[in-house]
Amino acid sequence: MTIASNISAGLDRVLTMELVRVTERAAVAAARLRGRGDEKAADQVAVDAMRQELNRLAIKGTVVIGEGERDEAPMLYIGEEVGTGRGPEVDIALDPLEGTTICAKNLPNALAVVALAQKGSLLNAPDVYMEKIAIGPGYPEGTVDLDAPPAENIVNLAKAKGVPVTEITACILDRPRHAKIIEAVRSTGAAIRLIGDGDVAGVIHTTDPDETGIDIYMGIGGAPEGVLAAAALRCIGGQMQGRLVLDTPEKIERAARMGVDDPKRVYRAEDMARGDVLFAATGVTDGNMLAGVKFGRNSITTHTIVLRSSSRTVREIKARHQDLEKF
Ligand code: VTB
Image (cartoon, rainbow, N blue to C red; front, side, top):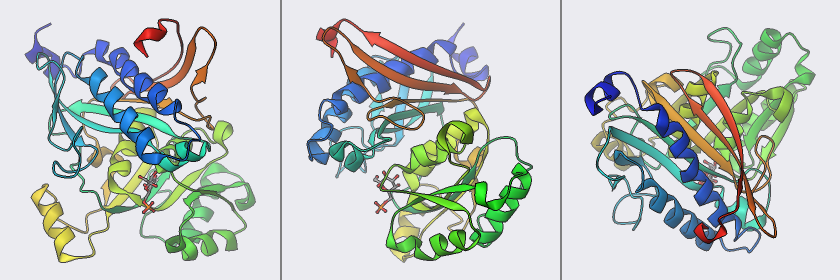
């Protein structure tokens, strides 16, 4: 298949498996620094490892969601070109260590994450906040709405799920800015799982409530994390809405430079990650969906989820790595 026909037919299937190596390597590097209280060091090794693996892929890739803007991030900055340069032109969203604090404290759900899409199909979100709401697959369109009161969303979700409100659990970042949402959700009788960080995992967890215990994600988190979560939801199914928090002229201007012409726009998952999307996440610390990296005497075990939007395939890959020199 030629590169041109690859693009028109979607992304090369082989890339799905190649992407697994990218997050595996980043996760193993970060996991070596779990629980050491050093966020920066854990992030740095994950970035190095992810960049090395990305540069092995047969793609002409551009980082659109990365470690920051060029002047503030020496590696995997927005606009950095990655890959061998021979292959399809793709956009990449990444977070080599989503949940640096979680990793430093060795708490659940730190992930290494990457999403890949055809060029021009990922929202180029500035590093600002995003209001988010997400639920898993199987609910009628419009079951929840970013602009509806939080209590109403919870009640509508319970109805759509066919359970009492008390059986609904919302995942919310534990931040003072969420005091009102937390109060409103609790007033319905629903439960809340307050998380310290890691809202990419929080959103993904809504796709499998039986496994994770999470039905809905609500609240304000990072916009780059929002695009990554949207990419995952595009592949698994589910509904998500997000709106950039552009509360100063400077942020509006910065977003405009990145192509955001309507600062108040509500993006659905399919607006943030369009077309054929691949997504991979490897557990760094043990989590509700993915096990963390395990270091054995003669092997290292990783647990990865790898997804593709066009086929909606959800693959879980538990890998035992025995060539330890590579890590
Ligand atoms: C969330 C969380 C991330 O940033 O997006 C959060 O998922 C939002 O920012 O893991 P604040 O910490 O300022 O609330 C992280 O915590 C870090 O990127």
